[in-house]
Amino acid sequence: MSLALTLRVALKALARNKLRTILTMLGMIIGVGAVITMVALGTGAQMTIEERIRGAGTNMVTVFPGSASVGGVRQGGGTSSRLVPNDAKALRELQDVLYVSEGLQSRQQVIVGNQNWQTNIVGVNVDYQEIKSWPMKHGAFFTEQDVAAAAKVCALGTNVAQNLFGEDDPTGTEIRIRNHLFRVLGVMAPKGASSSGQNQDDQILAPYTTVMKKLQGTETLQYILVGARSADRMSATGDAIAAEMRIQHEISPGGDDDFRVQTQDDMIAMQTSASQTMTSLLAGIAGVSLVVGGIGIMNIMLVSVTERTREIGLRLAIGARGSDVLMQFLIEAVVISLLGGGLGIAVGYGAAELLTYTDPNLPTLVPATAVLQSVLFSAGVGIFFGFYPARKAAGLDPIEALRFE
Image (cartoon, rainbow, N blue to C red; front, side, top):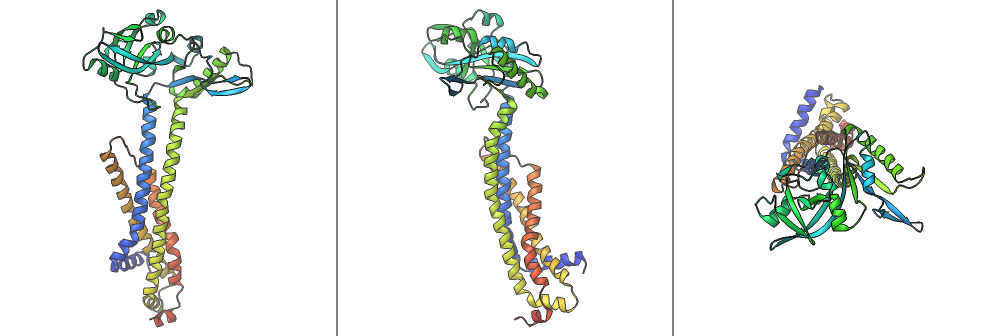
């Protein structure tokens, strides 16, 4: 019997019991749909994280204080206070480094007339604007002369400007931070959340020298931001920065670093790792329903073999081979799986789009590989769970099958 004829016979057999066929496919529809939806959510989350980190700056490398040792006991990351402006000065001499900005911040209450707002005063250098790719909305950023003179000038984030001045342009006005009057040079363009989730629009940027001397009274930095010259050499730039920092801090070979260097690629890998793990877990749980659907296919096919025993016996008696019967039942199982998988993909796409429509902050993305894997898995389920019933049907004795009541 030709494959085309076998396929036609199999489809007619499925069409005779439409409701049962649909109910059998339901397990595959739910399973594939759930897997597609979970993968779409996870991929969308990873894409958002990567875009947020990439949008936070241009080829950015961050140097943080490392751990300090007190009496032989390591105190943990950030406890070292050896990050100083001279470190940033040394990093500017590296070939792969394009921009460098010192950084520290102080939480302060800001007062304008009868308005006040608590926010972060972030001390940075002029390169900060280039590293962050952050344009101005109003006015201008401070200059190198302002940094050298520790001038009391600043640029406001959009949220701070709105809370203190409403929709007015505050350029040229003064704000009070502690007992100091700061002149507002401008307002930064809206930036959104940072890679850590902090609202970058709810902060005030000022020369780092001003924050160090007039607000904190310290000589150390909380971090150094570096803009690499090329995205292709981010890893090499990070290694060069680490080597230069070891020289600056006079760390002997084999000694523990008292600083930590983190590239954007490191941040992406770190933040997407948890998302990928959760996506895999949810997809695995959803995949269980695929196995349940496959068991349902096997169960229905076994029932079908029992119900059609006389039909199978008759076909074998008039010359059909066992391989023809096996192929017929195997095709029925695969058709059920593929149709269910196809409908499941459509359901998954629809569910993903519905989630994004109801909550725009919940982006989804269905990768082509997930669709291909779903199709292949559906076919695999049909073959795996359909083989035993098909083999049982092909192995029936024609005489015994014809006697079956």
